[in-house]
Length: 204
Length: 191
Image (cartoon, rainbow over all chains, first blue to last red; front, side, top):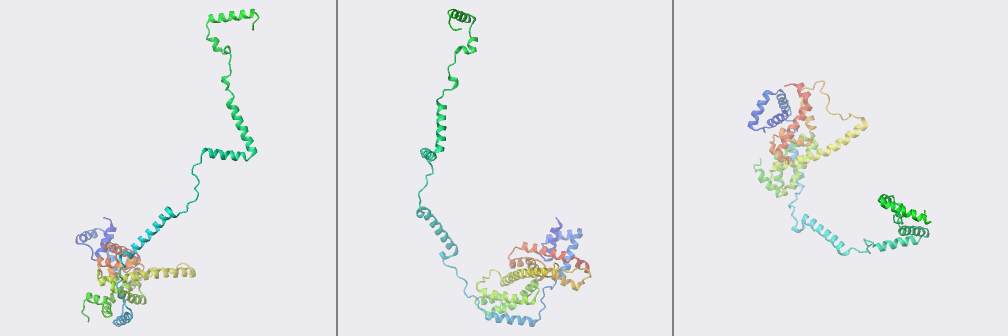
């Protein structure tokens, strides 16, 4: 046990508040601990020197005078004869507060449910048609913007109708794979056909 | 000498009996005065406060239910009134010290003088009184009730409205504070 606890026991012992078994343990500790022993000695000395410290040192005549003055003041002082009566049940403070709270809540509820003025509500969702019409209206009101818009639209249309480049007609003999896929016999046939055609004045 | 027990006098005083209450006041006034004097160290304040304690008690007598003894009840009124008074006086004292410091510089309201120069035993009591006076109000009240008035921790706890353990700790702390503050003087005087 720490000396702090033993010192508290010393204080309790000085007040006569330490139980028997603890007194024995404290005595045993004090035999071994010089610090706690010195502490007890200083407290004992302090206690002895503080004896009668609060004695006001008044003479009997002073007490008699004090009593006389008190009695004269008591005579002029009337005790509150009635013990304060409790208010009737529903007028007690807690019920008054509960009632007031209920009335406030009821008023707020009624206001939102019935009395609150209802203005024209803005629709929360706008249809696509309405939003497009609004955009067109904005564009139509500005000629410069309208021209730019029309140009953009026309360019988009032209791009949409132009056939993609990979769909343009391609001569099959331009494709090198075509020639690579032919057999020697087929190549010889084509060669003879071309020679014959040249001999007859066809395209070279 | 009035032989009526406290209970009878209390009952009569509750019905507005000034004479019965005066007798009760006569029986307890010295101890109440002593307690308040121990806390204020001033006769004028003590006189006013003690009168105030009994007047307050007399006015509140019809509401006194007797669950605590009259003795405990009147002590509790005394402690509460005195603590309130000390709190108020402490604020005023702090204000005065602040103004003193402004006027005369720091240290104008210094505490205890140095022990150098040897205070002797007859001076030690004055030092103890000053040291007790410097205790925090609740510690001072506990110390005076137990060490000076000889109350048990249980009785002091009832008066102070706290637990016995709290009184025990306050006594321990108060003694440690006093011992620390008075150590130079206690060593000097010797056993």
